Image 1: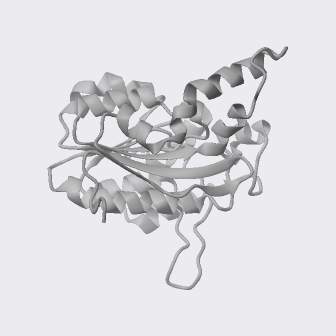
Image 2 (image 1 turned 90 degrees about the vertical axis):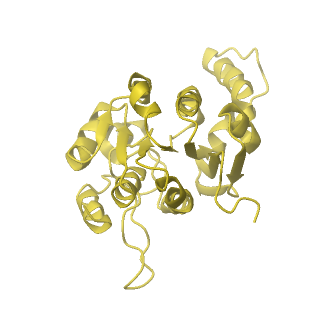
Length: 260
């Protein structure tokens, strides 16, 4: 399947709701997870990191691309500034599938929401292995350890579902494992702004504690340490919507062109 055909299949499932911040009801109805007309910017950065690493990884043998938060296959279109550029859809699932075909790798897509997973199966069911939760990756430990390399995409809607423990397990399973992570800094800076640990509302107290527990995520070098890798690079944070400030991290033992 070519990149164009992947994009065309995904295009059939356009968002049901306008761009911008969406309500929980809209997300349940298929509108997507906090979609924004600027979401293509983070996907472009993810793709650039993939193009940086995969040519090097592919030389080691057959690998596996993993998308830990594949979604439903719907996303915002890439802008088309002229007749020859842009226009394709840039979901992480599509990026993984296209890259797997190009670099002769296997691909695993994980999505915990059943309704989203059904849509995902409709597009990629015959192309990729689809799991109902990234926890299921641990059940594939012997298989994943046997690949020449792993490339893991991690693009959740908020820090609480990032799955750092799963990523650390994958890093231990296979030493040749790269992680391309979208971290929504704004999802963490909100709870860090809370000041009352004894607030009368339990939800506020829980958010306060969660912010303190996860504030390490604001440091790219802490991601490197927790995944047991030698190198990390991080993009400048970019505001994509009132709810999302995206920072893309590449964590690896070897980053092509690192330090140049």
